[in-house]
Length: 173
Image 1: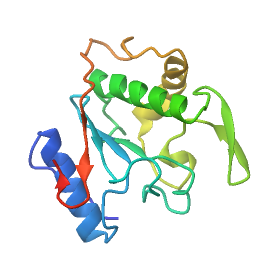
Image 2: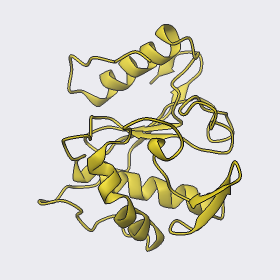
Image 3: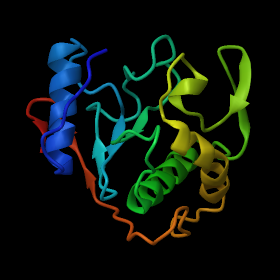
Image 4: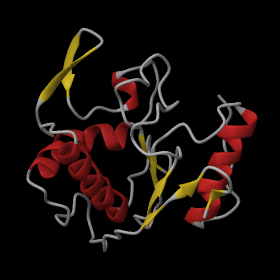
């Protein structure tokens, strides 16, 4: 795994840097995650082709899962309220689309686990970071209630519902 360094705070440029790292440097052909959410809460399609495409977001657990990444390091810093709001909106949409209970449980690879998990629940990693892991039970509960506006941190953010799609031929547009 290679670290992606960002020289810009612009969400689109960060997603393009992730595309270059995943597609070219790692040789995955595209972004590993199905969706990415930047600091402003903008949702980007990562892996072109939608949810039916197998991602490359967690080794040995890509089939039967959808990878969603919030852009940032959440080991010591919190995601923005905008990211958290958009994450809840997206997870609510996905659970509705697939008939899943956000605060329920599922069996994955023979193991019972919550329907919504982080990378560290499936592989040996710190991802999604301590700060997100601590918020996860509340995120699940609010997704189940379709509550996208209750602030999870101090201060309030304005949610963004912009979804930017990728095209296989040209990358991000």
